[in-house]
Length: 307
Ligand code: 13P
Ligand code: SF4
Image (cartoon, rainbow, N blue to C red; front, side):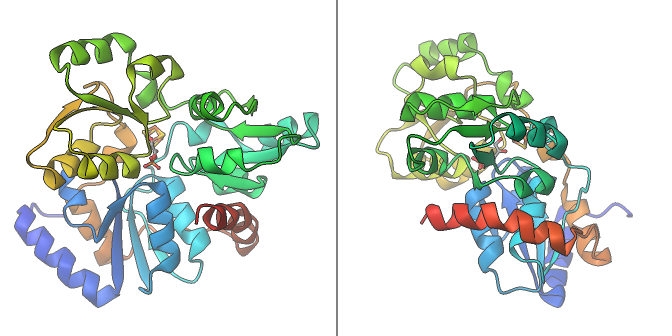
């Protein structure tokens, strides 16, 4: 594509969006230029609800591939586009269907609770999905005598176990971006900003817990900062969220917990890719009807239980 100024691209995107009947959904970690042209920016749960409820014919998903897949599973009759088809999620790729099937065979009575950061094939073998926004609520409602397999994020799993007291069998997956965040960095920030509240994503290592005031999903962090009377916050998650936070709270001081927390896959989509995607109607998420039907069950169960 020839070089175009951002304002020209924004105008073209807006016109094409109307022409195609598209809604643009963007995750809170996306580049600022992408968040700014989205119709909705949110966390995994908020975006899946939008995808399930939207009336438009086309969903253009700016996020990583498991999120676009979830949108397709929830809206199979719609065209779901992802501008960067190789935007994977390192954690989602740490578990495959064969590995999960083998673990299930070792624990035949266990309930499989799967973080949405997983492929449709893995979801299809699961009993219920969770996101970081509802995992605590859902896990705490599972009968106490039922064994639980939690995949793939052992850090989210351990953080939930610390809150609910529920023992679980963990898959040893993790998010490399959140794993980079260290206690030493947070301690340094707390010394610099002693009045700041520390808000962290539960994909972080549970060892940071003594330094954290609240563990929240990215959407939860956005709501908390907006509603709080406090002025200073140390935000311990991927740094893309700071754009939205600063835009929504211009009078508050928002400090990144770690400058290392950058998800490379969330930075793959630029404005030019969004325009290209709408122009060419690519890249379409394709899943077999059989896989959609199986993966939809645990996702819909999650949406029911998060009401
Ligand atoms: P949220 O659902 O909290 O937005 O988290 C998604 C994610 O991938 C975090 O790394
Ligand atoms: Fe996956 Fe981590 Fe990136 Fe979230 S931040 S999309 S969990 S790699």
